[in-house]
Image (cartoon, helix red, strand yellow):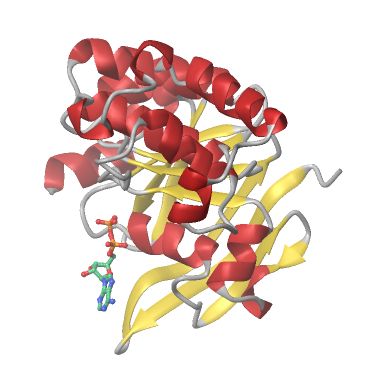
Length: 245
Ligand code: ADP
């Protein structure tokens, strides 16, 4: 197994001559839970866009499990085992959580095939396990539109897990959540980190403190500093960027 799930070197992304990412170098071990913070415009979204293949680099190396991602399309990269959760949940609101998960377990079929054909026993077990993982067993059969915002976020995480990704990219998972939902989301991500590599982009520093072992601070398209939450919070460069912005 490759020890580094991600190896990114000297990555630059230019939009009309403006460097959204600027000679960024980033390495992440397999099994790590990494939190990325940084002021607005620091390049966090562009960074995830490059990893998923949505944005192609102008320059630099992007390797996932030893594979050069620059050679592949966004679809191929998703099949290699990278799952992305956007800030706004993308679930079918008229379908139940169970049905949403069944569809995700069987992406190759369309919605109607999944709903109207009998589900094989193996898939039933997978969906059951996913419902347990995301804490939605009791709400498995209500319309997903009736779930709270936090529950929809967990459902979408479950839908990503159904694709068996090795690397999960999670964009601001607790924006708009209650304190209790935020704490539960933290517990979920920490437990998922036992079997996945995870990158979380987050602004909520209380939440970062709850989940982070290692934090990377982005600023103006580059890594400003990395370390434990205490190390980055006490770093003079970070203090200057946050107080100055
Ligand atoms: P963050 O997610 O940290 O707020 P972004 O990655 O969204 O930062 O953006 C980094 C910088 O790149 C910003 O200055 C933004 O305006 C710019 N940018 C992002 N996407 C584009 C684009 N498609 N075209 C031009 N500029 C862009």
